[in-house]
Length: 80
Image (cartoon, rainbow, N blue to C red; front, side, top):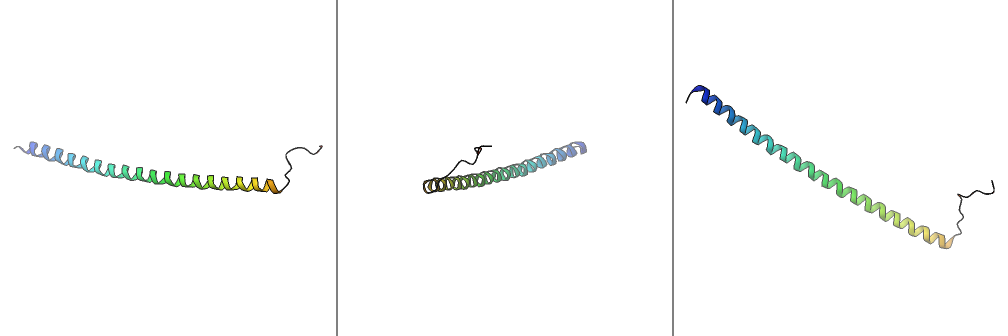
């Protein structure tokens, strides 16, 4: 085998190995990013559920207080 052929074989082999290694690490990074997105979505859903529960509790308290107390509309003008 000539020297040029050996260099070409070595160069293409090294390049192929480099591409395989790069793709492997790129896939790992993409998988980690996707997993982080899932975790973030789960946290957002949990926060949304907590906010909804707080809202429902506040609405129930408001209805209970309206039964007990007299509430006037403060947004209407008082003869001004």
